[in-house]
Image 1 (tube, rainbow, N blue to C red):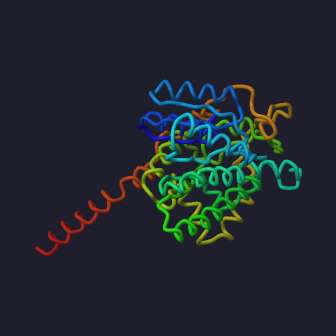
Image 2 (image 1 turned 45 degrees about the horizontal axis):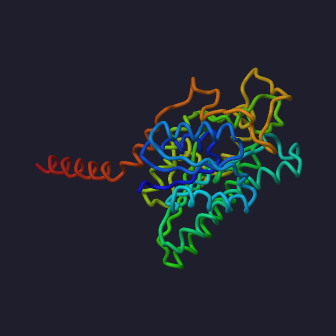
Length: 327
């Protein structure tokens, strides 16, 4: 039987790319999101590359909807092997410009959606003593940046939540695995559809990667049994830099973080649609508007995936060098 995978936020962006990536390797994919147009397009893409698909319109902020969706996937496709929590929304802008209701909604989708997805997955996986949950995180789970308090707060919370539940799984002696993939800036439609309170049109912090890079990392993480996977040199530098000198990161971000997250010369359209409260009524696909600058590969991710071979090659080279030196 094919692997059964659930992907939340599957209608666009990283989730859309993740669904395609698993399907390319023969998986049956349960697609969860609110937007029906995007879900149907994702279903067609999964089936086009040979996978089975089941689209289940779901608001992940609602625990009962997530639980019902999980059951629908198991009824339609079989026992869930991998659950990927990717769904998110946010508000770009300074904290004081975001209403309490907007902040709560962004948190409910991005953080509690991950919590409810994890609960639905564990409810099924723990009794079977198998399965993997992949939490789609960010470098911003370690380093908060200006104009993204709702998102950074949710990703920090997700990291703490994962660490707590992972301890509980270890205590049980469970073979269910949980991993978190920390991502860099990505070329996804979130910068077109997330609510914004900025003067300029929002953009990802450069350098930018294509969502397929994230999808490759997510699928690899689902089978590598790593606790955590960093994707891209910018992610590694952000996390390490913040550990070594958080005061310096804060100073630098205060100086550059506003400009680096807005497109120069592109004022925000105050009438543009946003998906905070309602899904988008169109299929947005996986990519945003930054194809011209987005990187399609990550050398760092390749090195992570091949670390054992690289380490063995390094040891062999060292031994050879030592042998030649001793002659």
